[in-house]
Length: 300
Image (cartoon, rainbow, N blue to C red; front, top):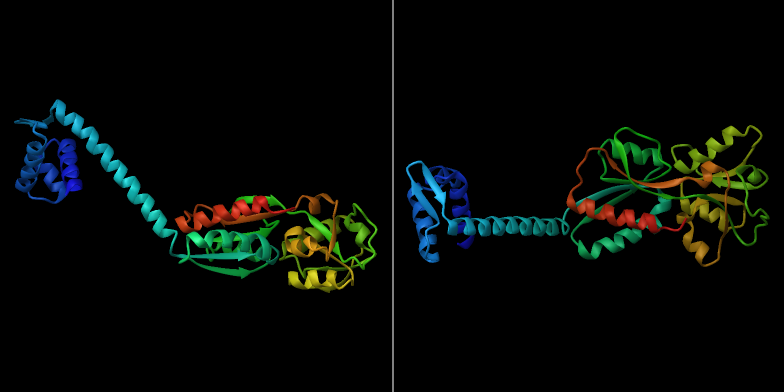
């Protein structure tokens, strides 16, 4: 009732006319007039001066007008915030992600996000960087995580973090180099992704193309990070990976790693993507903020 009174008074004051305000509020003019009279009786002072050309606020009316305006603004803000909270508790988020970021960055972000949004469903699909960019551009997914993604006019980068590449190998494998370049890996069996649709393979190929003398030995081309990590764990050779792909194996000392020094490999990035000019729903925007934070905090 109080809200109805304030809104009625506020509308009459803005319109300067009972009739115009009644039309705006979809009320009968007589009912609105009685409501204004009741407010004045409750306050014990007139709020309007009645003239032939309309209504004008009294000194008391101007004070009450400021109160009504601020109260209604506060109510609108509160309702908006409550709706945002409600939105964070339901809905769905679709994500395409390079596999190397799923087991660390993405799962950590999901673990942080879910307690406050238990009703939100997340759909995560694995793809190479080219596939991630294509799906984001086509609006098939809400967010993408890609390794050194190709530029696309319909895709924007929400956050990017360093993701330099490492030569990764087990303790039983002899690898003497402390600051190797890609050319130094030519004498070792390598495991890498199968084609340039994977950002990891694309950046390796770009370096290799600039050095005609590099002839890499690649006995294993695999589209699974688990396969590439497994190759290194088995002691068969060297895998080329960003740290987020093997952080657990590095932490428990099952793998060793040295950073590669070629600038494209050293300067590679992991990027959080969204479609350009798209307004993300509040639930997706909140998750993207958490994911961006996790991306910034990820070890490189």
